[in-house]
Amino acid sequence: PTWLHKVAQHPVFLHLLKLLRTETDLSVVVPGLLVLLSLLPAVSAKLGHHLAELFEVFGRLAVFSWREGAALPLLSGQHLRVALYAFFHRLYGMFPCNFLSWLRTQYPESNQAAGTVFTEVISPILASVKLHPLLVTQSRDQERTPARWRGLAEVHEVVAECSRYCLDTGQ
Image (tube, rainbow, N blue to C red; front, top):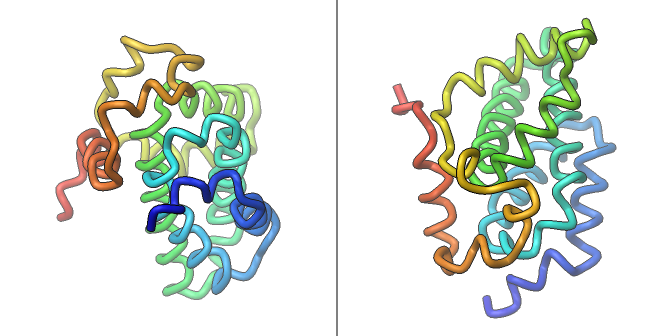
């Protein structure tokens, strides 16, 4: 739809982020995360102001999947892990400098609990990506500007760009 690019400025987007930061029911969290994953490529140029909230959602769900992993029903836990994996790849593909900077600040080696979440949840996902060229050629500030998205006008182009850095072959 022609109005889709305006979703990032609409209160419903903020409500979705708030829901993902606070909800504990996986039957709400996983579909909400999948909706967010679908929206991110469509509103990529307008996400600069929401990066902290997006990263907070990722961090919360990583902790939730680690802490509640054994207590979750098998199917729900798998759905959460798959959605978290896809969310990681979308964030890394779209905002690698900002996302890795956030990961460094959130999961320092000195914090034992955070280190466990990083080792058990995030590190295996991080091992499934290759070096993003923007980590060398751009800065965190340049990554937030709408100019970064000029060559990627269509949603499918953003999705394809994100998938270029995934080493997972689907096996």
